[in-house]
Length: 112
Length: 111
Image 1 (cartoon, rainbow over the protein chains, first blue to last red):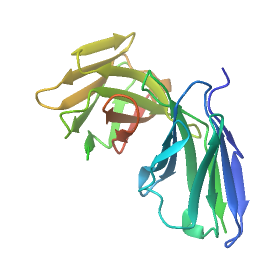
Image 2 (cartoon, rainbow over the protein chains, first blue to last red):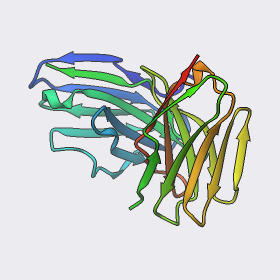
Image 3 (cartoon, chains in turn purple, red):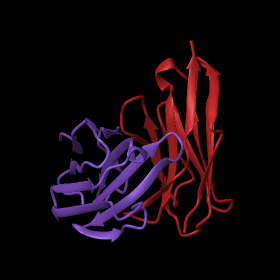
Image 4 (cartoon, rainbow over the protein chains, first blue to last red):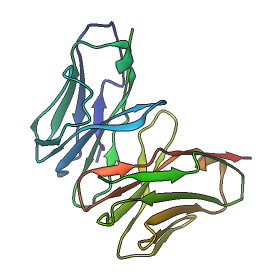
């Protein structure tokens, strides 16, 4: 099993540009989570899905952030327009009946 | 909602010593308590977990204890090694789904 796969690993973009982060969860896992990690705020849950349906998006900071899960094997997190304060490491994680999360390697986003 | 507090935020030990990290939770309905280790530049990795019907679980040099009455659980690492240096997170959840994470403990093991 290749684990949770995130792309890209690093993204540098200019303020105002659209950014799309991608995630492929582990096959058979029915929960998918998007987290943001910064030194100041630690691990923040942005949104999570169960069986491709968004369950809780209360952590999404503002309307500039959106997430989709069109099928069980793919999810995207989009920021439009991006701002310097969005700079962080974004993690995707998935879990199934075993409950424990499997995290991806993360996407380090830098907005200049 | 659930609130998880983790202490200490930083911990420094000599190689070979033991390390203990403690967490408390607020929701008595929580029944699953995982621990994650995050190394530099990587995502958190599940290292051990415990469910509310068990008081203690051990896996080689790491062990976790749970006190449901007091709503706290702890991670114990014995015979620490430099490769144990990392950030450790505790979490709590009810069954599958959303976990609430602690703020993390940065463990440094000095050779």
